[in-house]
Image 1 (cartoon, rainbow, N blue to C red):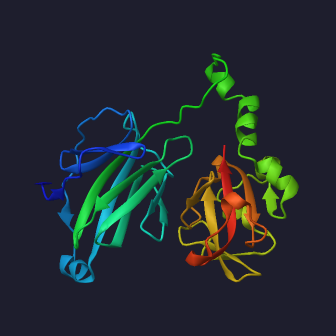
Image 2 (cartoon, rainbow, N blue to C red):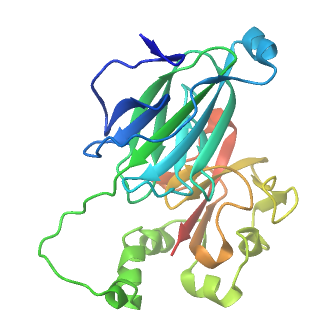
Length: 278
C-alpha cells in the first residue's frame, strides 16, 4: 500500500522506536512516545530527477526532535552498510543526497537519548521526508533526591557528569594528547580549531572556522575521525561552539586510540579527535 507516494512500512516496532505515517511523512517515534500528527510534505521528486534516476540514487530530508517536538541539534545519523555519518544542524535537521535507492538502515543517536534504528525504502529520483523522535535515557537511581535548578547547574554536578565520561582515567593511562577543562577555560576557544593549534602530530587542512576544515595525522598521513560527546561526528570547524567545549582528547594513530574511539581504516581514518561539551 502507498500513501501519497510513500511505501507504507509494515506495522510493528523497530529497536527503540515505532513507525507511523503522519501527514504524508514517515515518522519514527521512540518507544513510548504518543503519535502526534505533524505537518510535513509528502515524498517529492528531486531536482534533476532524470539524472538521479539514471544513477539510481535518492535523497532524505530529516528532522530529529525530542518527545515534546523540540529540535535536537548535533544528533548523529548513521546510514548504509558503510555506516556513513552526518550530524544534525542547530535546528535538528539533516539532508542526505545521492544515496543508492534501496531499503536502507538508519541509526539516530544523541548522548542522553535512547538510540533509534529504522529502515527506509528509498526510490530513484525521490526525496524522502522523515521525522525521528528521541526520548531521554531514564538513568536508574539508587535513591530519589530532589535537586533545585541551581543544584543541577552546580560545579559539583557538572564535575560528576564529566567524570562519568572517563576522560580523566584515559588521560592517566593512554598516550594520547589531552586538553583538560582548566586548559580549555584558560584558552577560551571560539572554535575547536582554536584548541588544535600546536597539538603534536596533527595538521589542519582547509580554512579554520569553516565547515570545510578537517584534520590529518601528520605521522600517518591520513584523516582523523571527529567524535562529539562520544559519538562519531562530521568534519568541520562548526561542530560545536567554543563556549560549549569542556575538554578534548586527541589520538594520532590506531595504536594510541582509546578502544571506544577507534577510527575506521576502511573509511580512511587513522586517528581520532574527541570533543566533550559542558
